[in-house]
Image (cartoon, rainbow, N blue to C red; front, side, top):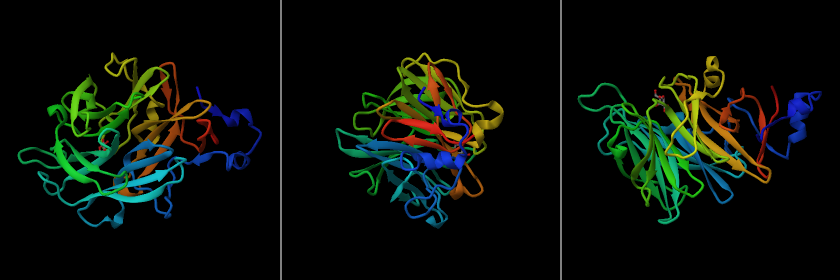
Length: 337
Ligand code: GAL
């Protein structure tokens, strides 16, 4: 387990001293706080995903800024080398209308994959909206695909479809150690899909596993020879106790799902979005990336990023508190209780 608890080690020091002690050496994260970008604006990358290209991380997500203008759906891109300080690279996708979607359409949980063969960046997004003859505002249940030649250019919309012919709402992204790219999607009638993308990433090619559990906010990480999958129950913007399962192969069999945090605390008010491994000279920290949704003021929705306690088939999300990450060693430390 790569997380050490500094308070236990140097319990006599005050929180302030602890913070002073790590300044410069490691980046400090404050779950739930306003997270300003390089322009001083709260980061707009809700329901997002992070990819690493060389030594730079790119964070894509729903841009719900109040200044976006009525009717626009936007995706923003940010870059960082330390995961703590993010530069806004701009809105990389903006649309008011899309083919086949009517008024009230929805764009959520964008994820970007880099295809080394085609040298294209391929964005997947959950596209939804009302559909004639169907109840509810999430009736279309499709994924959208947009492509770009550069990571932070303007992505051009290509198409939307139902992956493997199935309903798809929340999506997640997983890139395995061999570079293979997977889309995780929630299919209301059937469950939690892990599906491999086609060679050019423009399609969802084949089912790798269908876990017959109804879970959203799906994410997967590969850690010390085991796959860990997480998800939240279906309670809309309201938080619920997120759960995890493990398997030796992506195709399963998967263990039963277990709680990720104390049940009654509803994942500390957050919902899973991604599991991000950061490997350094001393090991790997897996970061739980969650959203703390504020449905009445979505632009102010917060992020809960915390290092997970993970290993030997167990995963645990510690209570949110300040923590630091040493990008060189890959070691995270929790700073305050
Ligand atoms: C959540 C989902 C969000 C959004 C919301 C709408 O369960 O994870 O992405 O779709 O429902 O109620």
